[in-house]
Length: 575
Image (tube, rainbow, N blue to C red; front, side):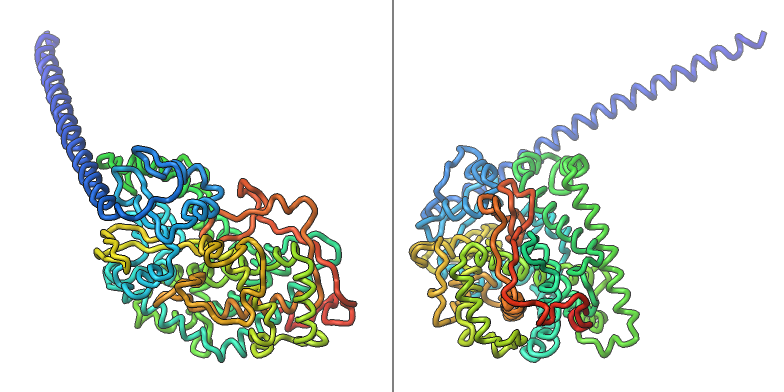
């Protein structure tokens, strides 16, 4: 008789549960409808605002000629850029030929994708110097590639913002630059840096074998890495000699991967940027899904973790050094001032990585292209080796004075001719953060990208007759070009602090090596030579940019057993 008593109660409970479930489903359906309407209105609003901003920007820039390439009705010049990513610098040089300033148009709904390509030195001086505070680094919210560059390099001197674009008006950048400037003195060039460059260049030369094909670019990247590890971080390194170079390898992988992932997904980002929360935007689920399923991005993150681990190790070792107060390397200077500057371990990590790209990659790229030119111009190589023999007789160690332009005009001219044809940073730019007017009267709206093009400027036939020809006489007698006319080291307040060090280091290395060796390009390599798709323009031996070697064959110029080329080089060379 108990069963009838429980049945009505169970049935009532089930009915209540079903009712609650139905009400919950109705509530979810209503919520989803509200979300869809709100999301659609939000996305449409953002899209319309962006369209209006793009329309206004194009109207203000209406008198500026467009770059010379096909333009899509809706996507502008973006499809042609993506098609030419593997020959990006050639493409830019071709599209601005004969145009001092030209506009690049992105999708018609995106004001962020519109900018100016600039070769005019007057305009370059204006936005890099005269109107310095109105133009700063690109914000990661605006530029998809910059977002990943900032994940790579953080907020160091290379990426820190200044002026109107910076929340602190550039105080952080100014502090970084002031501290870093203490190491780049003429006294340091003539003493500590000179000794390090000499020792590392001799170490490199010791590793070459007569007639044996060798990757000189790898040697140059190891040479500059060993040098800056000592100069910037006070660490003795022998990557030239085969010491573990996991740090350098991961640095190069991260460098290539961030640029490849960011540049190759520009079109996809433009398509998803207006999606509603939580799907749209640079940090939305759509972009996160792109990252998750991209092998390139996963490789990038893996390399970043390795870089972080090694950077933190360097920082903690520096902090724990009982002789920290006596050290004069760059990391020690920053650690000594970290309380004053309120630097964190992450901030010091950013400093480390920023100075590696500034002090290692640029000089290694310069040396690689220098020796490519030497190997492919035998008469020029003969003239320069004769000059080295005359100015550094008997294998004498080159000094700051013996490498002055008037002492080695041919070597110095080769260096600058290399910078003209193969600038280590082939393009750079700023974003406009306050409405401006260029010297020619052009109105520049907020958000406009200003891209200056050292690669295209160095190949401008109106400035450099027969620009593709290597002609040392362009630089003899040497007269230093104005920064804005030859912006390979930037210009204005952000001019490269290490420019003089890079030139000196490259000439020391070249003089030491050319005392004993001449070079030819390995058979079959000439038609492969290209440049990398990275911030700095290293050598590729693949048009697909998937191989990064400079295969040269060294031949001895004298009996190396009579020089310091011995089986076991002295400790000063090994250090």
